[in-house]
Length: 73
Image: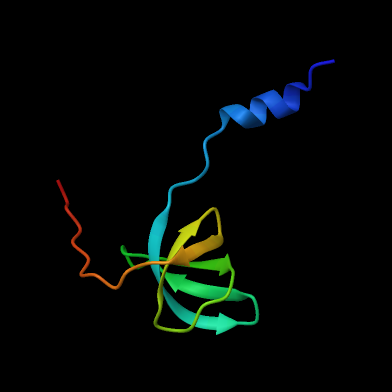
């Protein structure tokens, strides 16, 4: 028997991978600042000041500390 919900879920793409700067860390969750100035809460461990990759509210790993250039075309 087909599982229609599983097939539907397979069609959905995961969220975008975003680089964020950790502002506060609080036991398994952190507050991050996005490049545009917005803030989000994410699950995971990181130290304040670190740059991390965030996808769907979860820290995916450390991001390099490179200069950020936002192209507004």
